[in-house]
Structure formats: C-alpha cells, structure tokens
Length: 116
Image (cartoon, rainbow, N blue to C red; front, side, top):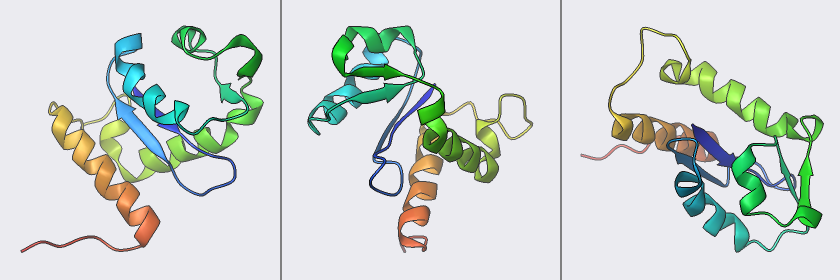
C-alpha cells in the first residue's frame, strides 16, 4: 500500500508511507496528519481510518478523492514499479521508497539532486 496525504489548498503530496494494509502501517502517517489539526478528513473508506479519525470529522467519499486519485495516476505513470502487474517491479522496498522520494522531489523543485 502507498498511502498519501494531500491538502486541497496546497500542491503536491504532503506526506506518504509505504507498507501493508494495517493500523501499524498507517500510524506514522496519521501522526503527521493529526498535527495539522484539520477540520475534517476525506478518505476512501478504508476500515482502518475509523479507528483514527473521529466520526464527526470523517467524510468517506470517492468524489472528493479526485486529487489523490490524480496523484496516483501520475505516480504510476512515472514509476512503472507501482503498477500492479509489470516487468519493472522491485523486490526492494527501499528502492521503491527512494524512487518515490526522488520523483516527489522532482515534482516540487523541477530538478534532480546530483551528489558526487
């Protein structure tokens, strides 16, 4: 699972995580998002969210998830290793994380950092 947090008033992906579909994986992302003190949270209805988000602050709607879905499409376009069935898959979780970090950096700054 690749979890992302976006703010509808800012560009880009503000926080993300990579891991299994469980509460332990979601906890670090929630720790970041919770500090933002949002008025409400829009999700796609994954069952784990209910244990973190207060019912009155939780909106479950695919309609309002269009920005996140657009980011998914863009990530999959540039990183074939995120496709479900591909020859470009990676068995290394670290390599997937580094690839995502590098791509998000490029989206934000329009340059690739070169060290050497």
